[in-house]
Figure 1: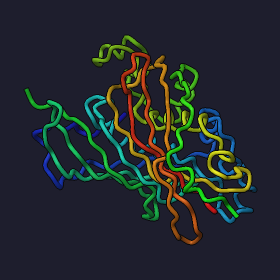
Figure 2 (figure 1 turned 90 degrees about the horizontal axis):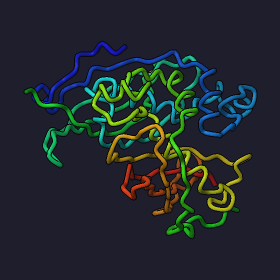
Figure 3 (figure 1 turned 120 degrees about the vertical axis):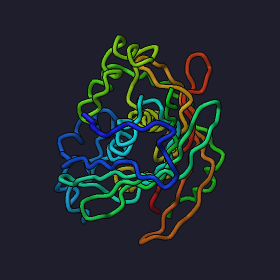
Length: 146
Length: 152
């Protein structure tokens, strides 16, 4: 349950921080479900011996699952999940089991478009060491007060 | 020696159909920790102001990726041996025209719009693919682009 206070369009100002959320620790067993959903059983995500033979500390969490948390950070905070309009996300580093993922954002612009209030923001996700995992931008709508 | 992937620019992959199905969503919701009531049933979705049961927006990139994974062949279309080669996601840009619903039948199609070489710790190609998902009514559900990093 997300307990962050929801914002209205009038509350938002450029430069404002969106309340951050930390997710985790990441669980290697969830990679099995993701492999099933993506029909992609690349051993890099499932076999830690295989991963270590390739110089990695452990199996690599699937990139789309990293994204899940950055999306949730926004959509759990919005009034309705599909108030999200646009995302642009760059994959910068790998996530491993046990990692904690902190998602953050800063409002960059507020305006009206297509007859609705819109907010642009920068968003990013980093691990417990401060390494950037995902870096991007998003656009969403927020309701106006009465 | 990898063939020149720049020759791929302009290639349009076959359109594939993906039905947003109950099985995938049931597998996804607990793993993702997605708990909004509108994801659970049609009634709860209507109470939240949606016509039908919606999926979490976080599943939309999975829809795009699933569509792409089915429409191209790593070897034939990207000159990549998936057993020994490495492909990674570079960037994703997606714009949503409407909510996505459980049961939506989407036609997903990608076109290679650019390929360029970059030098990191190793030399790799970046392949940018534009993606469009249309619904049964012919309307665009979402569109954007994905880029893949393909090591030489």
